[in-house]
Length: 259
Image 1 (cartoon, rainbow, N blue to C red):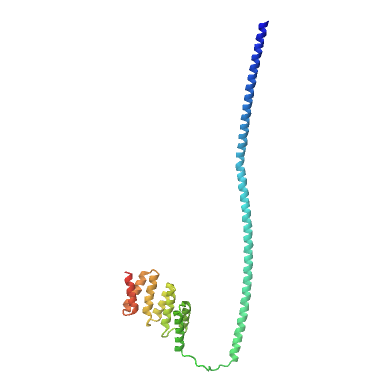
Image 2 (image 1 turned 120 degrees about the vertical axis):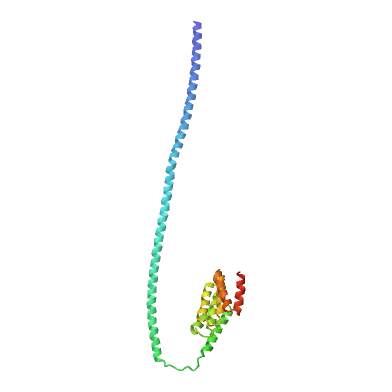
C-alpha cells in the first residue's frame, strides 16, 4: 500500500511538471504569434500608406493644375480688359485727330481767304533798297556754309551747302559745295552716303576742279568699307587721269600700301 502511494505521488509530480512545461510552451508560442501579428499589421499599414501615396500625389498635382488654370484665366481676363481699354483710347485719339483735321481745314481756308484779300488791297510798292547781286549773295552764303564746316558743325554746314545748291545749282562754287556735302558724311564715317555725294560732283560737274578730289575720296571711302577692289580702281583712275595733281600723289602713296 505504501509503495503504491509513493508511485502515485511521483506520477502526479511528473504530470504537474509536464503541464507547467506545456503551459510555458503555449505562452511562448502565443507571444510569438502576437509578435508576428503586430509585424503583419504594421506591414499592412505601410502597404496601405504605399497604396495611398499615388492618390495623394495625383490629388496634389490636380490641385496645383487647377490653381494655375485659375491664375491663367485671371490673367486672360486682365489682358482682355487692357485690350478693351486700349481700343477705347485709340477710338478717342482717332476722334480727336479727326476734329483737329477739321479745325485745320477751317483755318487753312480762312488764311487763304485773308491772304487773297490782303493781296487785292495792298498795292505793289517799289523797294527802296536795291537787291544784292546774285554773285555777292551766293558768295556770302557759300562763305557762311564753309565757315560753319571749319568750326566742326558738320550737320549745320551740310544744311547750308544744300540750301546754297537749291538756289545756285550751276555756278562757279556749286561743285565745291557738293564736294563739301560729301566731306560732311566722310568725316562722320557715313562712307556710303559720302560715296553717293562725291558721285554727284563727278556726274553734275565733270568740268569742275573738284572731280579729282571726289574720285580720291570715293576710293578712300570704299577702302574704309573694306571694298579693296573698288577702292584700288578709283585710286588708279586718279593717278591715270590727273597724274600731276596733289590728289594723284596721295592716291599713289595709298596704292603702295595696298600691294
